Image (cartoon, rainbow over all chains, first blue to last red; front, side, top):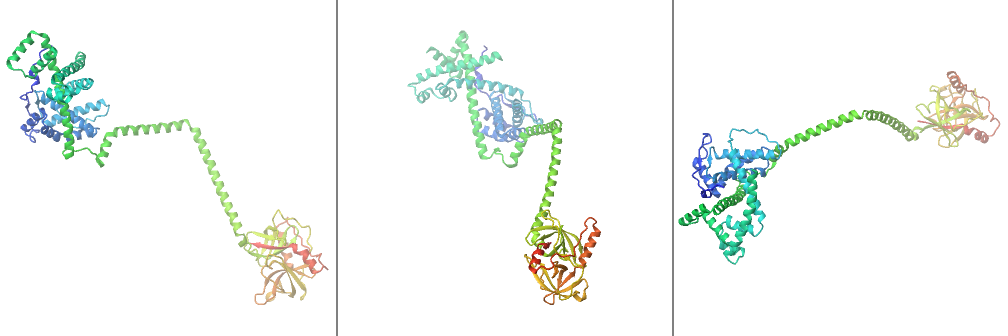
Length: 218
Length: 365
């Protein structure tokens, strides 16, 4: 197994470059503004996420509604695209070659067409391809992450309580061991640490059994 | 306990929480100890996945919060579809399904009708036949209705019909009667009633309006023929002042009245009739006028409107004329009148008793 650099876990944003090739997409939102938005998105900044949401949701909703979709479908598709964008922003090598709106539209279009095909429903390709960019690589990466996400979700759901809550408190909510010991009713932090270790070992076992079988299959 | 410490150290290393010298020392350990190295690699990957999971979860919940907030603030179109938008949306969503369903329905309908058409032509003709039968029944019923209405009308109008009534008397036992033409002048249906109240249908054989004589025939299966009549019909006019009597139906019962022959001619010297001094009423018209021998000398027909007790009778010789005419028209009939009376010498009561069953009430519409 190769050595993974520790720096992977430390997110850098110097890779975010916004090269706007299309002239007509340039005017409305200045370059700085979109860059700032994506920087905000990468750290899950509420205001940045809200702005992107507000600026793009209606467009996606119209797209989905006009193509045999419902309002709920539109919400799902748009939020998935937001996750794609979020992950891309976090990945550190985000290179956006077009306007943010175009990227969101392209992703949503692909996601929706795919879902229609899965449901064996008719997809009209009547909408114009003018404002669409290639997002295949982004979606491939997204699908891989989706699979990993599901694996982790599965593993955690298999754990059962109190392991699930204990690990979530420590690794996701980044709570202090003393606080965890108090709230979970352990006599001291060492006891909590002991319990956390057992839970972690179980989780890793479940997760890696899936992860490795997935890898060998792939 | 050792394992926990090792993992704790690895996590601190991964998180970059080590001091520079401790970190250098740990990196040396990684290079020499492959087990530790592998643990570091594995755990790094695992923590990375776990981090991704957590971040994405919190991001998703953030997105949902934002969606709700923005919808509440009206900054994005909440798709509470209403009115036309909803119709358009539903149409767009289901137009393909609708089209397919409509096509299938159409094809099915066509196929079934074709099938019915080809498989069951016989049934079809049966249906047609039934149709015709039905039409027949319908027509029949209509005809029956018309008939029934007619009959009903007849029944209903009977009292009106026979309101114009008079008297008639038999001149032949087979059912031939003499009466005034004016009684049955406008009548289509005629009935005669004898003094016992038996009613028979009758038809007009001949009607002479100028002489006011009509010959009727009882046309009823209930009527029984009479072999011979007791009275004769005189061929001549009697003498003035001869006592005469008549029987008639001025009301529903037969009424007798008597008088005398006033003159051998009628009103203003009319030679067709003779004048009588007798109390006559409406309904006495057509009644026979007898002399004391029981011979018919005339048919009571009119009365003087200005003077009371004056009536006129058609002279009996014209009865012969009428019968003669009728016999000429219809060869087979051959009516024969008798001039001989068998009532001669009988008293009035006996004469009337014998005669009255041959005097009929005549009713016409």
